[in-house]
Image 1: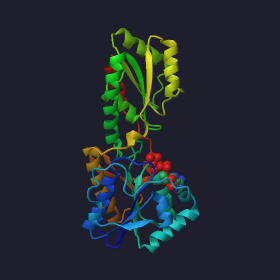
Image 2: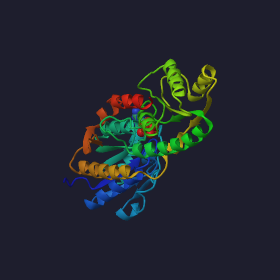
Image 3: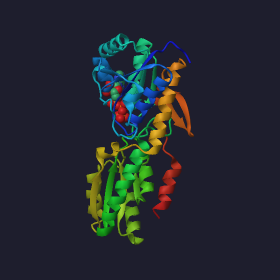
Image 4: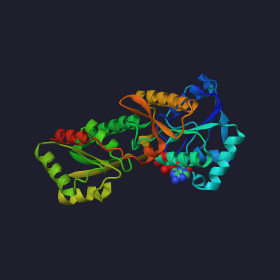
Length: 328
Ligand code: ATP
């Protein structure tokens, strides 16, 4: 491996996700394995601008693989959107003798990393950390699998109370413009209907489906709604709409919110974080830059950051069909 990189900085940026700590640990320990120094940057790009750094050795990341959140804290930094802010960040990194940077975050964080790389020719590698799974070049982002398990667990509990009272529940899940969480948890938790941004089923189809469900003898119903769905109604307006057209239904709403981002990472996310951390550091040591480390067909691969940011990750149409069949 190349020897001109002697110190690598690592930061977490944007929304936090379970598995970020495991990725920090992997970056720190891979650096130690290759006798490269590692610097932790607190509060994402804002900490880089303010020089909020901490030297990290392999023992500094003991007992964090199982922890949600991020020990380095995360932030959204308006200052990093300005050339002046990025220059300050660059000066701090140079002063601390940092030669390369690993950014753990979502597409916004990658956009910042790419701009920073272009402006200062500074080596960067991204690790996708977001529960939304909305990044091209990886079948799984860090935290997505944990979020799926968290949501399924909660919907199972909601189903218990829904079936005790013959109720219809609308459960809103995260995902922004991507329906991966809704589609997969909807199937996994046996939802009657799933509303995702990628498919506009229309409100008539929703009513028809609920009527069919009632006629077929189902005593309770769960509809999983992705926060970015295209019905044009938020989850509370959906409740009103259904109650107006189907007064026989007793409708409730549950917005799961930020609990979806918390909790101990699943085994899948811990292993993924470890593999991506190793790949990110070793790619930098091989002289690579401006890539994201991701996973495709269970292989760890590099995708140019630009593609990871701009590429479109399609929803799996087969899953939509499976969900339709399962709601029969
Ligand atoms: P999540 O998917 O959880 O929202 P994210 O990484 O997409 O994570 P953002 O808030 O979009 O989160 O971006 C994180 C940070 O990246 C921003 O606060 C900003 O500091 C930096 N960033 C985003 N876009 C740009 C840009 N165009 N130029 C410079 N920096 C940027």
